[in-house]
Amino acid sequence: MALVLLAMGVMAGTATARADGHLYLNEKPIADPAVLAAMRSYLAPREPAGPGTGKAPSPPAERAAVDCDKLASVLRAFGYLEAQVTCRPATAADGSLPEGTIIADPLPGDMFRVGIIDISGVRSSPEVDAIAAIIGDRIASYTGKPATSEALWAMESDVLRHVRDIYPLADVTERALRLDHARHLTTVEMTIDGGSTATFGDLTFSGLGRVSRDTIRKELTFRTGQPYDGRLLSDFQRRLEATHLFQSVRVVTADHIEADGSIGIFVVVKEFRENVAELRQDSTPLALSLLAALLVLSGRLMALYAGGPRWLQRGLGAASLAALAVSAVLVVMRLAQLV
Image (cartoon, rainbow, N blue to C red):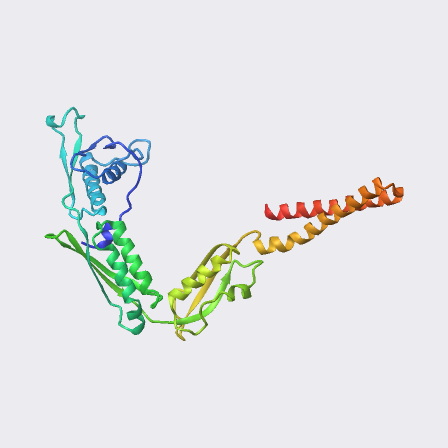
């Protein structure tokens, strides 16, 4: 049974137990509320078929067979890897169901759990041996968990991510799932094509505006020509995120290795409309203009209460108004940039 067959998505939500009015789900054999909710969701009312819809309705028996197969796939996605769902016509013993109703009887069987995970195809090397312990620990974290499609897919992605720390273009070429019926365990077999190792190639930047390339280069954790290590790439991305200069940061590799053995690195960022450093720098003129307005206004008040010449009072008043006007203009410009 191929692992890929278990990767079906399961819709969420509430629904009735009937599908198009022809199928009734026998819920008694299902004890897990999450599994039952997923099966009900699959049987939610769908788009109508028939005259005026542009869709020809399928015969009830044919639709029921398809639905029962899908319901069995839902069960398998939850770790019931040998589940079956049989279809049968309703009888008087089933209660007052409409004539022609077909009943779906689930036979979930036993739940299987993740057992052995066998990885092949990756050539041994000092670099691979260095991450072998990490991969072993990650594999151990999945052992004993229900063999759901979600867990199996997460396990495969986790293993592949660590292999790509050494072989950047590694991919799973074959996968299989074998069942140990006596212990209700699975053996997951993965064949990984590692491809070639590489060195860090040239950096390509995308999304830069206010922030300079030199600012990004200061956070580099590797050098061009250095042997590729995906962990250094992850550290580089974390350092860029820690600068708080960007809304988002993605550091990814090219999809091919160059003839010289290097692999290009793409730095894709999305800048904030304003970053903290710029706000601090650009707020200086605003602060100075406000301070000038306050000082001039204070001088006018002092001149007024001290009985100073009228021309001095008027001059200080005009100067304070000018400083306040400059402050207002700066505030409007800043607000316009932030919108």
